Length: 575
Image (cartoon, rainbow, N blue to C red; front, side, top):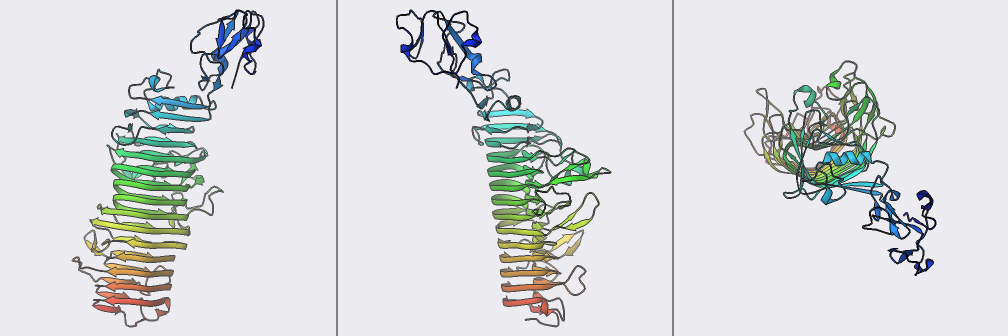
């Protein structure tokens, strides 16, 4: 707070009159001194000098001294309206944007609102350091922006609601742009609709190969940079609608050096590719993606891995996939509802942890919790699996495959409401290795129940597929897959409280409730397999063993076979 009050000669230098002092009691001046300046009971005697203010607050970027008016010999100099005895420098920046506003206005009130969100963000950047917090208020109606809007300073953008009659910003973007890209800590976006008009389609191998940071409603972070990435910590997206009126792309992507993000209560309308993507990013020799990935000499100097991410309560009208989690950790996804071709892909990423910065090393692919999904499946021609997990990554630097063990992953409470089309796998956990890996309470519907046909030939389809897996528990699962459960070349696997029921769907090959590979399988040993409390109904074969001499791989208890044509396949029974 600044109060300016001085007494002395009218000829005193103005700066000499400026001091921090309490407003004196009115009795400090003689009541009959003929003073004509008075405010709040304070009177200034003839020949005295005092300072009043035109406003009680100085706008961000200015100070109170610039708004002072002086009382000299009983008369105010300059403008004499709206006078206040005290003044405080504003520390909170508030800017307003309205459909009928003007970018030539000061933007500090609804009556003097700006006309574009981009101008408001530009002013937030220009005044950085002069405020403690910045808020941009969007009025009702539709605003339009061309090109990517980068948020490089802390700011809260709040609209008048995401539904019709609220606030909508339509972005016309190209295939190397996001609509909104968050590049700063301390950003919040709330209560508005973001409409994505992708005017140049994502196409070709460069764009179909990867991360999905382009064409999005919101991208937090950046994939590849030729300089170290800034830390982006503490971002909130709440009560948004991300709509799409152009070509298909991801709705929301979190990529690179990003941590402590909360995304909640999001509606995604229109047709998106992947609704939510989490992906590593890097300081690399060549940028930007995606063309850099295919350039000679591409190297990664340091990689960054999203963590501390919570995404909950998403309503998704249509997507090719609900979520992809690549090379991230401490991730919670919950409360997804809607229609999709596939649900989830969890993988360690191209470079796994080879180049991870120190704070991420040893943590990647841990603390992953995905649950409470309800989904209607509309499978596309290239849809393959409902849930896909793996611990194997293939480098884009040297093209080698490497293992990054998973340490703690819980995928639970997934319910398939309906299936339109054909998926080969309900759960495909091929190459899923590590510890603390649990799939539980999964109702997979009739995913995998149909005979899978690729290039004119029939191949196997599965409810739950565990191949080259280790440290995996599957429990409380219901499937009607043509191969209900497959456990092939895997170790330390437990499947308990499962219901496998097959209803004939016209397949020409045999159906199996439980299937394991034979001794000729090329991948690895089969060992430490526990099957307990499983109900197997309606299959041609109840359980197929890997052959003579392999019974010690199994620990079996409470298996119930009903309406099975052939309970056990192979010459030796392990029951």
